[in-house]
Structure formats: C-alpha cells, structure tokens
Image (cartoon, rainbow, N blue to C red; front, side, top):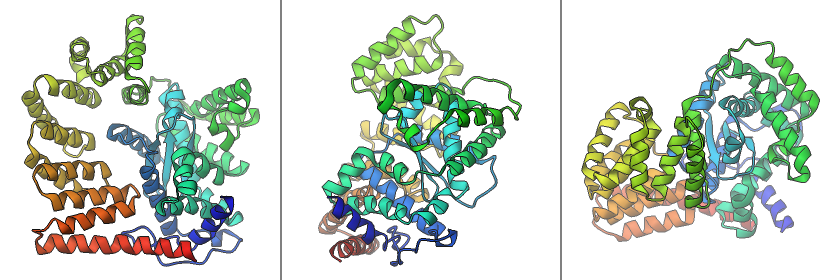
Length: 480
C-alpha cells in the first residue's frame, strides 16, 4: 500500500491546480529542491487548501455547524485585524476529532480539532493556539518548509487525490481517520519556525485584547499531560514540541505587554457548551451530566444553562426546556445562540409563532447563516417550501460555497416537485463535499427529469462538463 501511496505523491505533484471552478489547473512540474524561489505560488496554495477542505467534507471530518464555524472565524479575524495585511483570505474550520490538535494548511486554511476547544480553559488559551497557527501562514513557514523538503506538498496532494479517486485504502481511510494528524505531521515546522510563530502569536494576542500569557498557560498544561500520559500525549505536542525553555520564553515575551485580566467572552462559553452537547455520544448521558452540574452549582452561568437547554432539546424533553427558558433573564435570551435554541424549542410547541419570531430575527441578522438555515428548516417543517426556496436561492447567490444550504435546497425543490432543480442542487452539495462521481450522477438525473428551459439546461450541461473534465484528469494521472 505504501508503494501506491508514493506513486500517488508523484502523480498528484503534477496536478497542483485545474481551472478556478474545479480547483486544479494546468499541470506543472514538481519544483526542484532549493531555496524559497521554488516554493508553491499563493494561487497553488489556495487551490490546495480548497481541495483539502472538499475532501475533509467528503470524509465527514468537519464539524458542520454554522454557529461554531462562525464563532471560530470571528475569533480568527479578530486576531488578524491586529496584524499587517497579507492579502490572503483566511478560512478557519473545526475538525470532528476529540484529539487535542490544530494545524495550518496551504492557502490560509486553519483547522482546530473540537477536542482542543474542550481542553481549553479560557478563550485566551484558544485564541493563543489560533494566533500561533495564523503566524505559521503569515510568516510563510509552509513555503519555507517546502523549499527544503519537496515531499511535503505531494504528500498532502496525495491524500486529496486518493480521496477524489475513491481509493478506499489510501484515500478515505487516511482522510476519515486522521487527515488532520497526517497533514500536520507532514507540515511539521522547524524549531525556529515554532519560536517565530510563538512570538508573532503572542503579539497578536496582546493587540487583540487577549491575555498574552494564554499561550504559555495552554502549552504548560499540555506539557504536564505529556509527562502523565507518556505516549498518549496530546497530538498537538507531537506536532508542536514544547520544552520548558519554550514555555519560559513565551512567558517572558508575554510579560512585555500590559494586560488587564478579564473573563472569557460569553460567545466562547456558549460555543464550548454547544460542542459538549453536539460531540456527546449519548445525548441522555450529557443531559444528565450537565443537569447534575447545574443543580450542584449555586449560580450556574449562562454557558451551563445553554448547554442544558440544548441537551434537553436534543433529548426532546421540551417540558424541561421550557423550564430552563423560563429561568433565563431577558438579556440572556438576547444572545443569538440562546435565541436560536429557544426558537428551536418553540417550533415544537407553537410553530406559527416560531415562524414569526424567525422573521423578526432575520430583520436583525439578515446575513447570518445559522439564522437563515434554521429559518429555512422551520419553513419546511410548516410545509412552506416556496418561501424556503426563495430564502435559500437568495443566500446562495451571495455565497455559493455552502454545501449545507445546497442540501437543504435539494430537499426544498423536491417538496415543490422540481426534480431537475433538486438533482442540480444535490450535485452541487456532492461536488462541494468532494464526491465528484456522485455529482455527475445527480446532473444526469437532472437532465432526464425533462421540462428544462434553455437556461437551466445550459447550466446543467456546463457543470457536467466541468465535473467530467476534472474526473478524467484525475483518472489519467492515476493511469500514467
């Protein structure tokens, strides 16, 4: 199997990109080992990052939760706002893995395992990890590392290509189980890179209003775990080796900045509780755990109350959910995640009133993805597919890179008996989740549905041609 993996590395190294619409370009020669001049272009790195994301989605390796995704991106861009502009668009995403890890990929893509968020004890610690990974990208550590080890990009690309080609042994097994681990292992940075990322990251933390000591605090706790658990040490420490000297140096650098201690933001506390509930294997067990915590806490905070509310909804215990909602103050209910949870419960009790409240909420948050998605689902629940269709089409015009919305649109179009449009939307969902063959099959079904006007027919045929060209190029590379 390793022989085939190496072969894939060589093949894919010649397919760093197609056209922008299909994320690979004309073949390019594998760069020679040499200086920074041999590093991949920003365009190649961006396309590589896009391809990794699509295949992560294909393997179900992402936490596809709009609220959590918005939070981690808001946090990332809050840090970036303090840094000089790089001209690079960043994308922050959560990986569906309880292992404590984070990694930077080409093209401004930064992955955070949900396990790392649950392991953090403050937003300062989480921000420290995100700032560190941002620094790896802004300081071009990927390009520098590639200039000295030409195998790095091909290894990442091999994982991408193997998944696209449907090679279960090399592709899906590698990606579904440990793509974050493999990617970071192949992109391990030098000690000097790590020190530079620490230095830049600590500066970002201080300028963004976070505790600059958060980095040393988090590293220190993980380092203690590594001594306790030996080979079971957090993966983050294997890919970001931490020493006593490094922790001391981070603390010394942090001491150069003035900081007034403050509590973690309510958004951090809410999203951490949300992750606890969503990642739980047994909904009943997490409800029992959180309820016991709340009952034994004299003054439970909003984060704990929110976690209980989500767990109650997850367990369909709407009587308990109503009781929790009743205990919240007006100001606590005004936080968007809490408001959305309340509407989710209300939809089961007073669906028509819930629809009105969704409409009101949309006036205040017209571009919020979670509000739009939840509202569209509520409309379908009340058998209002035409309204859901208008809502979804409008949001996808502005941002078509949203697979969850295409999947919901496919369901909506089917409710309206628009089978061609339903298959077309499902094709986009499959394509954006790395399932090119399935996307082509959906477009074939759309063409067979009949009653297509010239515009939709042209649309479907054009996308079908793009998808087939991409699949053929990948098959050709496999055969050579």
